Image 1 (cartoon, rainbow, N blue to C red):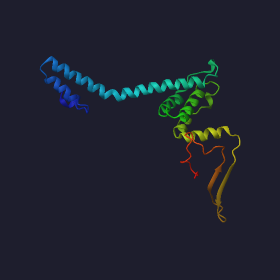
Image 2: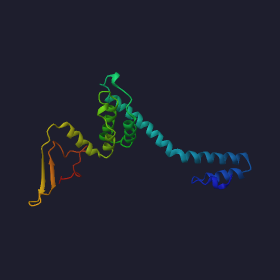
Image 3: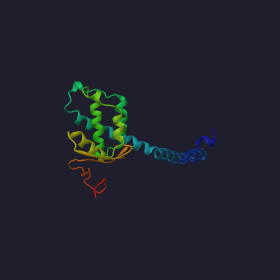
Image 4: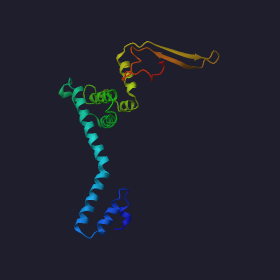
Length: 190
């Protein structure tokens, strides 16, 4: 084997070469320990990533237990993988945000219920992935409102009758209340 096969950024090649060049057992032990420590150091970010994924999966299971608490046991099914896999991947990136995490958990819960699984579309995962926490709050309010007063203002050219929208205004109760309670970064709020 040539030294080129050990061309790794972790310095493992140098450690292996040093092990080959050592003369005593004590030196080999010290160098071998260094090699093991280098390998552990190289793999520690991956180990941290795996542990975080395991934690996220456990937290998601708890959320789903709460969401499916009222669902009859005979209605609980394995969700379709085309919904569940992307949803589980996406929820792992937003575990620190209650709004988005709850939306993904709700989607998974619907995908696990025989009564609602047909209403779940894989595109919903992508839609939620594109949302901010504030978008999630607004969407939840939209879903709950039966009537949403709104005004649409558009420009219409007199001769060609071509038109384009100028402004659409929708009225919500507490529209300017964000999940964090801060109103400073909202559009249209002075």
